[in-house]
Amino acid sequence: MRRRTVGSCIAAMLAGIAMAAAPAAMAAVTPGVQTFTEGAQCTANFIFADGSSTYVGQAAHCAGIGSANETDGCTSRSRPLGTPVTVTGASKPGTLAYSSWLAMRATGETDASACQFNDFALVELDPADAAGVDPSVPGFGGPTGVGGAGVGSTIFSYGNSSLRQGIALLSPKQGLVISVDGGGWSRSAYTVTPGVPGDSGSGFMNSAGQAVGVLSTLALLPLPLSNGVGDLSRELTYMRAHSPFSDVNLVPGTTPFNGNLVSAIIGGRSISNKLSRRAARAGVGGLLGGGL
Image 1 (cartoon, rainbow, N blue to C red):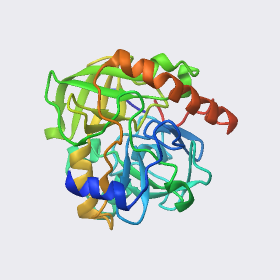
Image 2: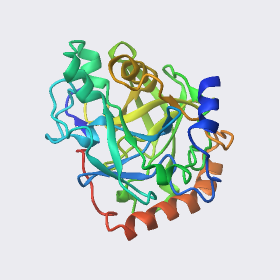
Image 3: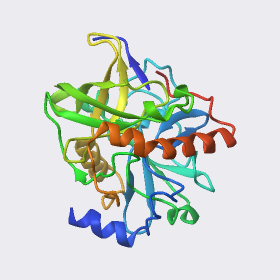
Image 4: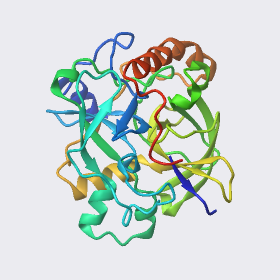
């Protein structure tokens, strides 16, 4: 996670065409699994598809090669497309297929808000792993589509950083949007518990179960321990306009959304433990990367 030192019909069709979702209890890859890009640990947000390939979303900065304080995607350095990405639960490495940071540099983006907050990437799964994917967010279910969240809105997330030492009770999170920033490109939010290093890239949903954003930063000022959440709708719109991925859409969850934190903790406990064990067996449970 980067540190800021200063203060749907188509998707439903894709769910059936691009991937045959595994039952949630048996799925090997879901939102919330850990990803490792050259050792940098992040958390997958949601599942995406385009009719031929299946992707997990992560933050673009997860492939960054600069310091943790480099937050401008138009100037920060990144590993190239094609970089192998280890996805917990997948039998083979995925591939970095899209990065908003690389797309903005290639197009010469000058919008300061986009440069600061557009932090989204796609990791293409190997076809052998597509059948083992369930797009449901552990504990909460959903997402139900893509939406927004204004100031004061309740939001839900699932983080799976190894810093939690496999404590499943700490993975499901609920919080509030406290500001909308950058002309709508980002939201600042407080959650219980706050996002920590390794949670970077994890997804946020609103009270209707719609996917609203991607965890990008842990702020120190002016709102200590708040999280910066990039606006997923804007990030997807940018991707479709500035890359070959114009047909990529969010895949809705197969489990109905339930915005109850207690139920999410109880329901997500076994899933979180399973994911943590997989990461530990892969020998990557203690690695952290991509900054704070």
